Length: 114
Image (tube, rainbow, N blue to C red; front, side):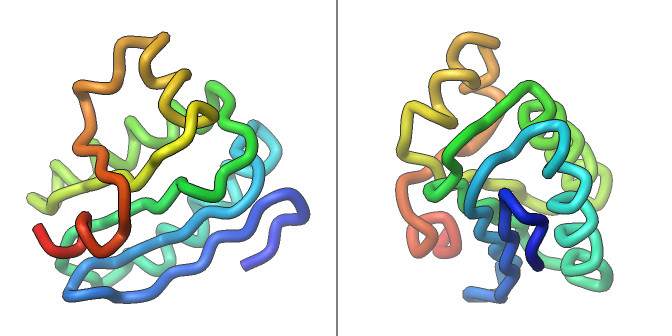
């Protein structure tokens, strides 16, 4: 799904819904990513893995999106994991004291194996 500055691609890996986000996560692009995740997540009853390794900008709206996705997964009783390895994503999580709020792994294979 293409939203000019961001692309969100969903696939299933070992019963996990993996959504890879490529590009910028800001107030203009997050609604499109949320929509893509929502459509892919409908009817899926396994863990959600959000792959942020190719995100080039991560604004406060992206942080809010992560918190909402975490809550949606909790409500459904499903695990939610992030794949992130860059300062672009990890630094805002650290500065807002949210690192401990998420299960963060370095690779999709690792996140989908749990």
